[in-house]
Length: 403
Image (cartoon, rainbow, N blue to C red; front, top):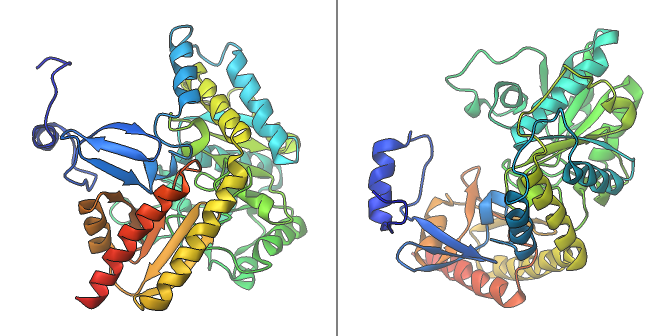
């Protein structure tokens, strides 16, 4: 079979069943092209994407500045190990660190789970001299699939079949400061949480919760680690979601949208915390490679020059208006939770049929926690595209209600 041969969706699916391990639930569609908030399948059908790249497509499919940066870089220098300096990596660390508000220093890897693994290791390195190694995490969290990040994920359904989990993690109820306080003991070194839970159902913290976590960390000498893999890079209308509150973490982790759809992860830490990550303590072979770093710099440039932080807030207001109005006429909607371009619509029914019917009508969305429709649209989606997608979703929900 020649590499240039064009296959139908049916042919690709048949090959996948023969040669790919079936650890993903996939829709019967082979996507071949994307532009902005649209994707096309092998048969030429077009879909409006309200969930581009599971949140990685923050600035849409094939964003022009990212495409150009990658094309230029791949013809110049693809990869060198981190025993050498490269300009794109250093410039990216500067841009991310300056935006934290605490002059952070960066470590780069390839994914969100790797970023959280690095954060856990860094927390333990800081706690080691005091005999501290435990990390408190919260119910409903999701931090990744590798064993450390998976253990930190306080959802037993993800642990099934791969036990025993790693020692050193205590779980507390999300939103309950008293529960968090009780989970802290003399061996605790950090509290790790998402400022807004994504996979957990787009859960926005109750008033005072994040501020209370910061106070607990200060009181007990703990590091506050914020997992911004899904919320970072402007998703909520701020560069980092924690900037919606009057707090600063000690470590923030990033991935998904960091490089405009190119695989990249990383963390940014306060200098006095970051210094514990000395030579030999941690590494990532492809971390901060020139291609990903150039893509991330182009992503930051796009967000800044196109005013996409403000745009994220505008997008949130549009969805809030549309879904609050829809809720009045559609009783199967039990809650609407929105922060910038991070949208959750909780239903009183299973959301799987909604996702499937939207796909049939040309709209791509996600359902998490079985009943929460999760939308992470691109920050440069236009109002008319939002209206088109919302009309499809409203039609699907109202038809389900009447059936």
